[in-house]
Image (cartoon, rainbow, N blue to C red):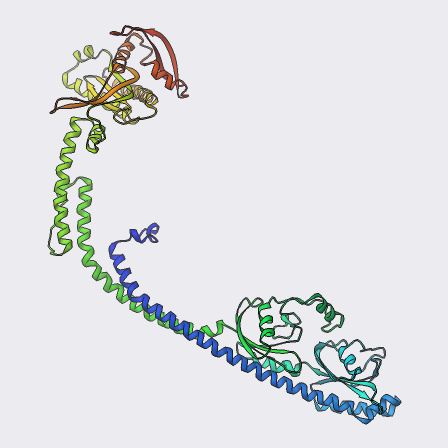
Length: 609
């Protein structure tokens, strides 16, 4: 099938249309049902999976809270130790060694504890499980400020200024005997104690767990590029505070553009699940989330929505393969069924083409059916016979009158009683035809006329002229009737120029064959005439009557007196074509034509050089 009509169903063969319709009505309901069923199944799976993600996040948050609670107990235990208070009072090396030994045992007992420190009320390090520069001052940290006010404190995940590693800082105040805060115990829990739990979630699967702090900053994510980025743009003052606290040891905190997720977590305020579009991942995600009661953190577990569609896609592909096999079988059956309709229609089409070509001998259909197609075949045969008869009548009419008049007559567009028209009349005649014909055999005269008139007729036809009559060697051509034109004068002049050009070529050919050359004159007159049917009820002729007809004839005769000017036109024609760039003109003055009382202005026309 032509590529140009593939997407134009109206141009398809009927067999293909029938096959396509049968396929569509058979397969589309199956596809629609399957699509609907798979869609519902996918939605159910998504709902179930989001609940699972919510349960996973809740379980992780409980485990994280348990780790934080137990670590907080260790920090609190150390702050109530008698030797720790003793060291803050005396600052002697013996007590320092006892306290440091105890701090190291605590750190050794829990490998997740990365650092244990004892600070005085100025934020200076009194004792530490790792070497500290003497000038180290932690007075700027929130955990120190809170403990100095008598409050136990648990930080978010911070990046240590000394170790440059992420961790969670626990602090507790140390009181003297009078209840006044005399120092602060600080314990740093390695962030891996928590992040390892979150990281385990993503092993061997499509799920990912991440942690969001109270400010909406991602403090842990398997993708390191998303670490320490906020879900939504931070308020300037919040961002400035985080940077000034050196919370993450960076002054660049970008936004992930996940405002919808941030708003959802804040709005729910408790466990929940949702579907959202992840800007960093550029895909739809399913997420379950659960806040930590103590910390203001939120544990989120997410997975790509596309991960759930893989098994369903496999089922759908298997189903589509089955539909394809069924479709092929159905297409074969449809083609066979459609053939019973198409074959007789093709026979009708071949016969119709024969009518179109005028080959009425082969424009018959053999009827072997009793259904509607058989009845259509009978009607076609009758119609073909009628068309053949009408074509015969039309051909006969076209030989009696010109094809243009015939077509006007058949369409009913010609006014039989006559109508006033402004036309251009072209008369052309062979000079010395009588003398020339006397020197030739009659058969040669007829051959010459047929050759000459054939060339002249072709020239006229190109410019819309109506050959009104052949009068021996003369041609009468009308421009503007029965078919009207706005530029009758120019058409007539162009036809005259082409007639002269064709005559020149014809004479070259005749001279080469040793035959007499032909000379002709052309007269063109423009004016008002009456156009209509003239004759009897049995034989009539479409022609024009008026003074312009006589003037054109006289101008043609006058060309014999102007042998160098074979094309003469009257003033009315000249006025219409004088500005045409393709022609040049020469005024020949006033001339009194035969049978005319008044002189008229005449002009010679030539093609522009």
